[in-house]
Structures are given as structure tokens and as C-alpha cells.
Amino acid sequence: MILGFLSWGGLIQIHEDSSSSRFTIPSHEAKANLNQNHTSEVRTEEKENLEEPFHDALNNQFSGEGVQHLVIENAAGKVKVLGVEGQTISIEAHPIAGDENHCEMNVEKIHDTATVRLREKKRRFRLFNRECVADLVIQTPRSMDLDLRIGSGDAKIYKVHGSLSVRTGSGDIEAEGLFKDVNLIGGSGDVFVSGLAGSCSATMGSGNSRLIYSTLPEQGHIKLRVGSGDTTVIVPPKSKIATKVQMSSGAIKSELDNKQPGLFVIEGTVGSGNLYLRNP
Image 1 (cartoon, rainbow, N blue to C red):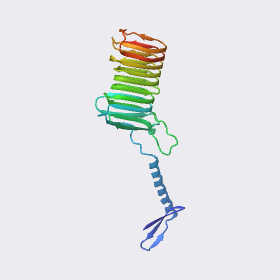
Image 2: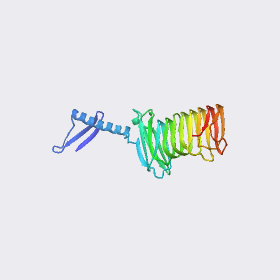
Image 3: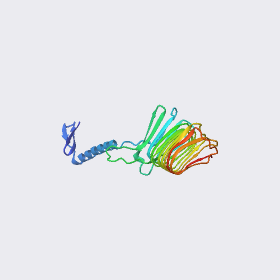
Image 4: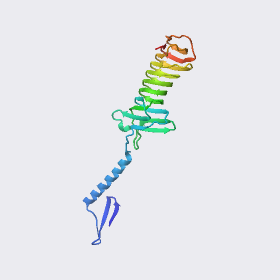
């Protein structure tokens, strides 16, 4: 039989010798080994509690069946979205060197909306949390409404059909596809969107914008709020457009083959820069 007691010097075990019914106390060397093993177990347990297991959460794949809206949130880093055949949504995060263990990904599906959040990993017993900086590469079914929310970084979207919303503090926006409605908000950076087929709203602090329509609806609008930079709108031949844009400095320069106004309206304000209206 083994009895254990705690003392100021550590853990002491008393062994009962069944043959002689005598008790023996381990030597100092045995006690040292015992205390070392006990301390090692405690430290191992503390380490497991302090460092949560880091799953491979920076690569994710799930079914996009039934998903119509895809929301992407990335505080810092580029976002690239590619429309592909099939019903699978795959996400890859590529942190910058040294940030691999500071990023975590959260995926949430509610009804027809899937939300992907890439953010800094919060750990216990840390005074400060380090910012997660990572680029996102996403493949999604081509028919998908996209909502990209980026703190700072470029946004690139290719071969996607649906509505498009992009908000970025700083960075370029480049999109090619077929977009029924577009909403763009950017602090600074250039904008290039090709494949517009509906209304568009663009609020840009600074940078040049180029909006290319594949088809222009008879009714709709382009709402511009531009601090500085040139804006170019390219529409199909024989398009009828009315312009109601207030220009602080700069001019509206139309090169359209049809000068008759229509029910499709370009409106808003431009601080400094020109507004160009062109055919392909």
C-alpha cells in the first residue's frame, strides 16, 4: 500500500512493506525524482491549457448548395474571388511570414447566407493580440451574390454572376463578370469593373474609376461620390443616358454616339476630376 502526503518540501510517499508491516520513507534522490515528475505533469497540463490546439482552420471547404450570398471579412490583406463550376466553396488563407499562428477563420451559414471571417486569433493570458495579415483566395459557384469587407487590401473578382458589394479602406478594386447591381466604397485606390448590367453606386475618396457596361438597362442609375480622380463610364452603342452630376472642378466629357437623354441617370458629385462617357 502507498500513502501520499504533501509537505513543505514536496510530495512524500510512504510505502508499506506487507511482509514486515514496516513503513519506509523514500530517499532524498527518490523524492527529487518524484517531485520532478509531478512538476513535469503540472507544467504539461498548464501548457495544454494555455495553448489551444491550432486546427488547420486557414483552409476550409464546404458545400455551397442553397447559398446565394457570400460575405467575406478580412481586416488586412488581399482578397481574390474566382467563380467556378460546381457547388463547392473553398477558402485558402495565406498569412504573411510570422503571422501563421495569429490568424483564425470562422465560417457561418445562416439560411442562404454564408459568412467567412478571417481575424486575429485571441489567446488567453496575453496582454496584446497581434494583428492578422493574410491574403484570401476563394473559389465559389459562379452564380453568387458577393459582399466583400476589407480593412486594407486589394479586391479582385473574376467570373462571378450576381450582385457585388465591396468595401475597402484602401486598395484597388478589380472585377470582371456579370453584375446586376454593384455597390463600391473605398477610401483610396483605383476601380475597374467590367460586366455591369444594372445600377451602380460608387463612393471613392481618391482614385480613378472605370465602369464598363455589357448591357445597359432602360431604367437605372449610377450614383457617384468621388473626392478626387477621373471616372470613365463605358456603355453599349445607342445607349440613352441623362447626367445630373455636380462637378467642383473638371468637366463632363461625352463621346457617346447617342446624345438623347434617357431614363438611365448618372448622378452625384465629383470633387476634382473629369467624368468621361464613352462607347466601346
